[in-house]
Image (cartoon, rainbow, N blue to C red; front, side, top):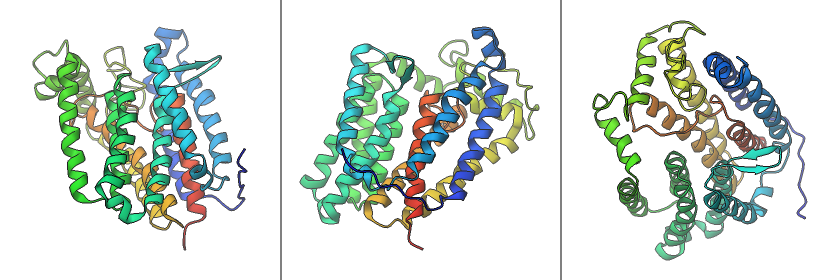
Length: 363
């Protein structure tokens, strides 16, 4: 077993403060948005709040504390087996026709683990190639396409188009920052468009989401129901919102008010002001993450920092854009805010790694 190097220096207080603010924001909104949903499903108005606190926040904080003390270079040594395990877990969910893996009292989504696994494996692999290798078509572009294609195939078989989109954008961001040719990036973009077109043709429900995006009034009680309810919630909030706890759409009108649709409830209760504060926290976190990447001691640390930062920022963008009809509706949680223990724990795990890179950053 590989030895883990423990470091005791101070962690990044700015990064921790931003993450803590997002988690507290999320707990408050889960408590508010889920009060009716919790009572209806479980007979406990604060079930989702308590569950998120006990199975998401507390274990996430504990994991983040220990991970930020581990030298980030350790993850380079275990990147391949970690990636292999994530692939096996994704494959298991395909045969089980379920996005979750149950291990007795504990269950988790392997797609969340796959994001971190892909980040560290790509970072280690691209660093080993060097800039010349990354730019080479056969040595850099083709193997990268194979790695990404394998993970993407298993994600789309679940199926989970939202996670697939975020995963691909994270991988392409790391590939670009590592020094890839722009012609290769454009080729990836063109291939991605063709694959999305094929995926839409194969599954009618994906086409319905695009149709609802293009014409929200075509079937307001059918395929356009969720996005119309989300827009109604966001629009009714105005500048200052209806007030915390005063959302009307959470009364069984808006699907998944504590999950994928929580931003709509935020817009309704806290208005434009609350939404801007939330977006500002994500932007500040992204700036902090990119600064850590810029000052990272080596290429592996730089690529991992970029990957984790893009994971958080892109996932937040996709969730917010979907709830405001800027892109077709897709089911993906808002980082640190939406209900979901697996997502929160793996995000905090990744932030712990980012904190360790920050510890060792160049002055």
